[in-house]
Amino acid sequence: MSIFRIEQLSKRFSGLTALNAVSFSVENQTIQAIIGPNGAGKTTLFQIISGVLPPTAGSIYYGEEEITRKPPHKICAMGIARTFQMIRLFPDMTVLENVMTGGHIHWKTGVFMSGFRLPNVRGEERDARQKAQAILDSMGLGDKANYPATSLPYGQQRLVEISRALASEPKLMMLDEPAAGMTPQEGEALAEKIGDIRDSGVTILLVEHDMGLVMEISDQIIVLNYGQVIAEGSPSIIQQDPKVIEAYLGTKDNNAQY
Amino acid sequence: MRYLLRNTNLRIALFLAVIPLFLPENLFPVLCLGAIYSIAALGMSLLLGYAGQISLGHAAFIGIGAYTTAILTTQFNWPVLAAFAAAIFVSSVIAYIIGKPILKTKGFFLALATLGFGEIFFVFTSRTDPVIGGLVGIGGIPYFSIAGYEFSSYVQMHYLYWTILLGLVIYSQNMVNSRSGRAFRAISTDELAASTMGIDVAKYKLRIFVLSAAYAGIAGSLLATYLSMTQPYGFRVDLSIFIVLAVIVGGMGSLWGVVAATVVLTWLKDEQLSQYQEYSALIYGIILLLILIFVPQGLGSLGQRSFQWMKDRLGKAYRYRSNRS
Image (cartoon, rainbow over the protein chains, first blue to last red):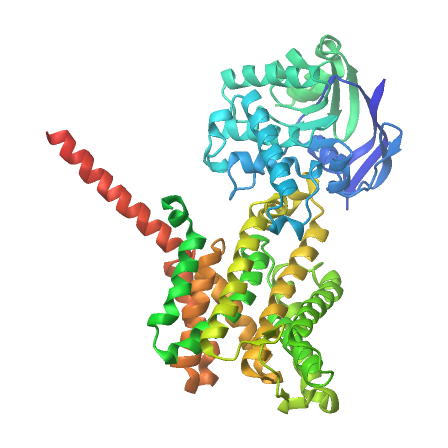
């Protein structure tokens, strides 16, 4: 059953066509990777799905509901969370506070009431703290909870971003190059974690340049080049596809010119 | 008991409770006015220090609080407490109405838009003679009173203002360390990341703008009863800048630091520099520059930092001695 579907999605930046009539659907509880050379439109696609950029044309469906052009906070509230290619943790907060902020939509206390430490407000705060701590524990960052978020090494900051996205309890999670800047060992551990997240019932859209990681954990792969889908299928099919090999390595003719 | 003494709020409350016994008479006005301005600065600290949004028109909200109190008590004979509540309500409602369009702008443009609002308030109050007295303003505002008990001496006012301020500091501290507080801090550093975390950025900006205007309304209402009169010139841009300056001097993330800075700046403004009124912008500018160059985190960070420095020094000396033996 598909949880998420994109139809004929296009994005033009004045003269440049970043995405050209992209269509695909994502099956529930799978890891779907989106790969392609630099500038293929992967990050643009994430920006549009998460509501940060409006598309030029086309539509996005989540379940049966159309979410095209909804503002980011509404898309998050529907169960779609994301991380960023350039890490965007809140720098003046601790690791734990960052993750608690990720759970924003699950708590109710408004601005006015939050100044009074009423029992229900305190209880809510305690729950938020416990949930955030549990997520950090599961990511192996439990002992870093009270560190300033941006004081951690790069690889761990990526894990905090994933934890923060998890805190909104998403049904669909978009990871934008989660392994960038990680050591090979950290990448291995990350692959395992992403698998665990999928097994816990979350569908994952993954943009990643580390092909080892992509081939290891993906259920389905979509290849973008110049804003168009050029191939789609399981890792073994994608690895054999001549168009994909061409996009990544160039054709013989191209090489001959040099 | 020792735990209670370690609580900063309680220590400050104790200090403020006993200080009238030792203070020379002539410093009471500074403490009273300092407390009133601190209330407005506290609201600005939430808006600017935590949510990262500036307002150069907050004097207008103080003015709205003051004028609401003045009109209701002198012309409609409302009890002061009711006028006080109305002042908070009116300043919040006006902040809500103008905040919706104004908060779509950012940074420099937000500063300009709020500055414009402040000037509109001045023009409005100075040209509407029959109802609110034009440039002469409104006099004869009664003292603050609760159920017939009147706060008419400096000592009584001292306790009244600082009690209200203490309550608002605790309220603000609670808010800062809550879901909403985290949302504001998220917005101040990264609006885009905040919105993808499900935070409705426009809604939260409006909420904090209204809340900070409500603080300003409280300050304005108290100011009207303290001075027993209101005048358009009391709520011009120099007061708006004074409040922003207090937040920067005190430290963006330090509520008590802002209160301390406000009291010191009030003392400077009303006691030391009152005959140099026309140079106030220049003097504020110099203070602002010095702070930004030498203590960019504000004076509120100094207490923490000097403590850390002493700890480091003592730690080093201790390690040195234990290594030798």
